Image 1 (cartoon, helix red, strand yellow):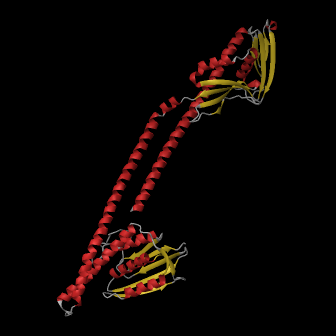
Image 2: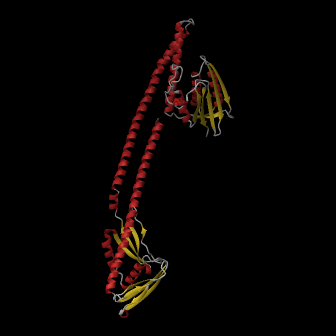
Image 3: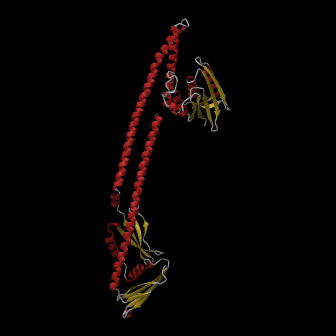
Length: 472
């Protein structure tokens, strides 16, 4: 019982840690996902802020510039070049990619640039060409840029730096995504792709909106965790109470066995004294004395078996030694052949190459004795018992006890290993016994790390085998 309680405790604690870990992992992933979504929104806001800034500056350039600027670029998905113009006199006309100037355009200072941008498409061609013109006709003012973007982004904006790289950037990308322990992110937005320029903007992902959005999830997770911890605490309390009850039961059984041994021994001594007196064999008193003696022996055997089961349940350490199993089985066979109440025929089939076996000698012989005792008890007047011992292919020793008894029905073959269980199918329910023999066999075999097997058919007999590992 103590072993099972420890196993339940261990499983409960492991399950609680596992569930808490899963809850934490789920919350972590949820927060990370929410921060990722917030990061994408921040990237979109940064891109819109840059576009608004360039549009605002571009409008000012067109109003105040005295330079007619024509920019032409070739893109991969267009056969004709794309052309954009910045003209203060509104003298521009574009037909089929060709610029036609109105009268008066010759009085304006003109600039023309042509670029080969065939590594990209023309989806944002006019935007990047206008950006190039705007940047060429103005002087970039970082302070003005920061003030403009700060008004657009608010508290999320931390700062920005112009970056000139080796490759053109056409789409906004997140360079450093936010994490649970680092709430800042770095976004790179196209600024002047033709000149390989981009704007790296550092922004902050605020946790308060994310936590507000996950409030009910966090509350639900917290409630589940609290309920789990309370359930485990209650389970441990009940198991401690059960352990206390088991201790009281064990103490009571030990005390009962101790207290009953003295009157039983006294009773047997008195019976022996009376039996030693010369009496007629047909005397009624002699029969009574014989009955009392037999029942006293049965009571002594019950107390001994109960003591053995209690000791096995308390997990008394096994005394593993190497002993002669062949000689031990021969002695048991000789003892059961001397049964006075029934005709008992016992045969031994020993097929091992060695006589030595590893295990607790006394307990294992007690197991075999219990099986043979059941064979005698639950058979007819003529009992045939076959004891076999052999090696298995897995370095194990198998000991089998077969009989010609009443057998056990298939629906009861698992229940007979339970303590104090006795089958209702026995023809003679007055047969002495308290249902501890097979439960004792089960406990001792498990203590050795072995296994048990049963083959039985009602009216034809039973075969029970135990397998004991012999690994060093």
